[in-house]
Length: 344
Image 1: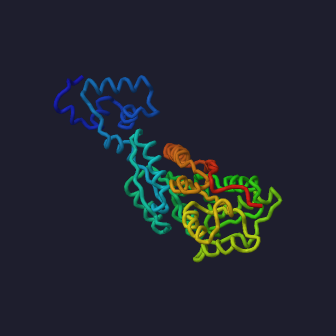
Image 2 (image 1 turned 90 degrees about the horizontal axis):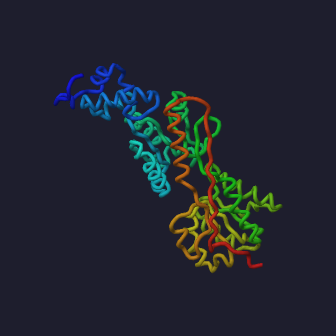
Image 3 (image 1 turned 45 degrees about the horizontal axis):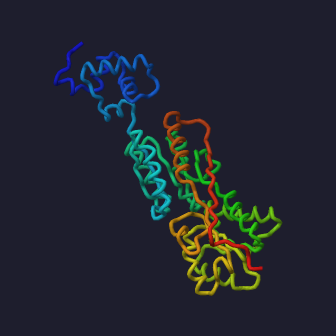
């Protein structure tokens, strides 16, 4: 056994593997405590390293195992603070495991999404989490994700895309919207409106479906005139609908941003919340909690979505291929002061 010397600190992983009469991959796995090395062999390698004064070089280990310890995160639109919360949850989970997270913003552009994925692959990301633009607009192309799937590159869609064999993790929408609507029905509301409909946005389509499902179960019907599309002038349309004859006594808004934009115009029109109309929305922001009245919302468990998506991504990195997995995380209904029984 050669004694420890000044040159020992310069020993490469290949030099040490040769000294240990084993492969560089086995050395890397022994130091990283990865499976594939017996406990007896691990102890032998670590003891030999101490005696030889060998300290593993992380970059050399990564190259030996073709590991970069980088993961990619492609956000749909970083102006949405939910992406920041998700990124922090991912980072807090993966940094203790030695991973760094590279984040990119697609700005709701499928072409930018395609470019971001290509750049992350060039930077040797081991796997990618993608918030697909297709969730915002179902008309956007998916060929770049199909190519990833065909090449067995590890990625997980944070959202829901059916029929392509993608691994997906998403917040549950239909049952969440149904629970919100049931809450309004139990308060006594029979005329419920939906504001912010978009036919090509998957989340919004499912939320509207959930409202309809709950109303049908209660033998109620969603009046088409009480569904306001997301288009220019939607605020005026909503105010006019509420002031008209037989207008809704309760509203379901597609998100808390719509609620923030609507509250003041309703006050200006003399429509009180919740005395004249109950208001609910998806998404539990700081504004929703501290507005007066505080907003009845649904709270998405982004930390659980992050945990499940990372667990699935790491499985794909270790074992590419195999049948796709779709996992859904329940949202919580948070009842606050913006909902109450109707006046009559």
